[in-house]
Length: 622
Image 1 (cartoon, helix red, strand yellow):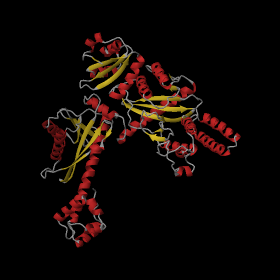
Image 2: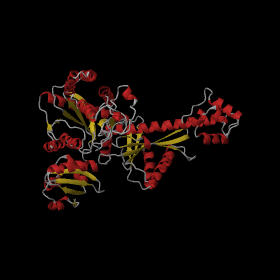
Image 3: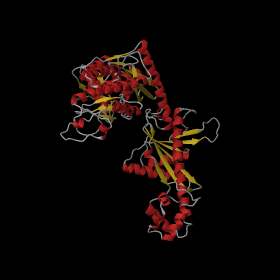
Image 4: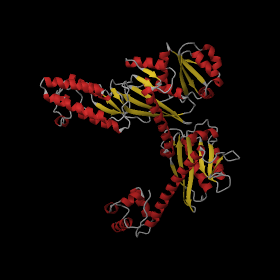
């Protein structure tokens, strides 16, 4: 690998006019894009004139600080290297298939007497993989059916073995053919595995014909027991065929790829067509950090999905429009599968109808995923987050927001709460609760000062993750105190926002967004995605703070109530809490456990037990 200079123009003279892969990195040295070129010099020259190129090139040029390249023997080799580097480096601006779903696959092991396993990750272990199975419960239904029809072993014994084992209960129940004691030969077992493969590949008609012929041969040999077994297998397979709902007048195996886009996300959906039947589907979501076209998304997806796929690839891959390198990818897949693979754009007939169905389903999937974001469960960066980032000059990308709220009742039981929004969702493992320690602090400003000082002093000391934005539930005063705390800790790079009610002022929306350092509130119209995003975070922080405050108030009320029990004073109550760990544990303690406590005599233990289990006692919210 030969390093390039940070200036493209200076380096162009040294770039070879050969095929290869180029690797772009930012000022911090992180790889942000990997690309393939038939001619490295010509390809990289296009980055010198981003105004002539699309938005993708313009966005990249603003970020690129350095570029490396690797020369390859030919374009096919460059394609393979590009795919491997994208998988390894995970560049921000490449299409990356993230393993966040892990749909289940069915694995046929490579043992002498293979077994079937449900797995969610591939290994290069010589095994065969089938799937994915969507919905996920479909894989267990399929596995149960295979065990019923073919009686393949499901034990974990290492076979073959010289031991004369006694067969397990599955053999006694006619659920296994007992290869462990030689009841079936390796050849016959391999034939059974071959039939299972045919079944999983959707070649049911071919399988039924094969079994019918073997049943006839068994009957001619007067082996009626074997013929009956084959008859039952045929009947079971035919019942499965009848249950298939969607039949397509296309018998060549196909994958049909549909794509849908929104401002912030892209959805890709694949239908798996096998022997004229829709056997399943798989969906993927991507964040649109730069404005890739549908064709660019499709090209990147096809390369990443199929070039690293260990499961069988169908004869034809249908895409909605012509994509770059399609002939090159098809050539590579043909070599990989040892049979002809084509990538085509359907124009008419049943193949076009299949494509339209995939496109409609991709649109519906994208819509449902964007709606899921409203509950914090989505995997896509919300439109509101991107809009807010652009408004604040954060390059349209926000990776973390810390949101703070306080709660008190007439100056008592003061608490603070912090919730975290990270990348695409609320990260509840990062939520934090604060009990106000200062006895002199009774107002919201003082509580916010204490909470922020405690949080970010620790964050700076322990090098904890820092947000791009701190959002305060409050107005200018709260924003100013937050900015002062962060400034004193030399964390001025964090933007401070406040969200406050307009309190009915005319021509002002329900909520006003204050930004530290700005004289006027942030210009967000009512209903704007960025405003809805901020309100959603404020509401989550408020919910978390109120829940903590109520729980604390219940605990304090219960503690004060316990002091009314004869024999229970403050010191004894503290000893009990140290011994049992919490009020919840104390309330759940049995009479025997209370009597065994070193902090109580038997009479006081009985009184406390009766009091805790009497009606009307305040419940512990811990």
